[in-house]
Image (spheres, rainbow, N blue to C red):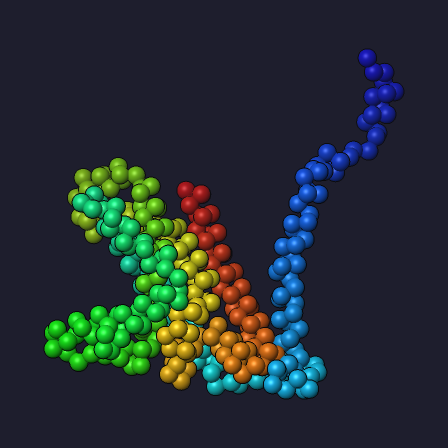
Length: 309
C-alpha cells in the first residue's frame, strides 16, 4: 500500500506521453518513406532547376541562369495558348461523353437480359487496350478514309467518305480517348448502381413515378458521389494524354490537336530545348495541382454532405 508521500511523488512526476506513443515499426517505414520522397522530389527539383537555366542540346555552349525567361518565351509561343485550349476541350468533351454514356450503360446493364455477362465483357474491353494500340485501331480500321469501317458505312448509304483525322482531327482524338474511358465510368457507376436499395425504386413506382422520374429523382442522386469520383480520376489522367495524339495526328494539322503534354514533348525532344520544355512541365504540374485541389474539395464536400444526412 503506497504512503501519502509516495502518492504525492507520483503525482508530481512528469508525464511521458511521447514514450507511450513511440512505435518501433516507424523505424522500419523510414527507408521506404525516404526513398518515396526522393523519387518524387528529385525529378521535380531537377525540372524546376532546368526551367530557370538556358539548356538547349543543339547549343551546349550557351548556358547560364535566365530566371523566368523560359516561362516568358513559352507564354509567347504561338502554340502555347492553343495547347491550353485543346487540353481543356479534350478533358471537358471526354468527361461529358464518358459520364453520360457510362451512366446510360450502367442503367442498361443493371437490368437482366440474355447474354449480359458477355455483353459486359465487350463493353469493358476497350479499357484494357493500350493507348497506342487503341489509336492504331481507330486510325487504320475505323477512321481510315479508304479501308475504315466508317468509310464503308458511308459508302453503303451513298455518302462520300470523310478523312476524319485530316478534316476533324480534334473530334477524332476525342472519340478515341472517350472510347477508352467509357468502360471505366461504366464500371464505377454500375457498381454504385447495384448498391441502390430496390425498395426506393419500388416506392417511387407505387407513387406513380415513371422510368424517367425514377431515374432523375432516385437513381441519379444515388450516383452523385460515384460520378464525382469518375470526374476526379479521369481529369487527372486526361491531363497527360499523349500516345493517342502522337500516334494519330502528331499534334496537327498545325496545332489543332496539340495539348500541353504534346507541346512539352515537341519542345523537349523535337526542338531539343530542355529549359523551355522544363518550364512547360512545371506549368503542367501547377495546372494539375490546381485541378486536383478543386476536385478533392468538391469530393470532400460531397462526402461530408452525405455523412451528415
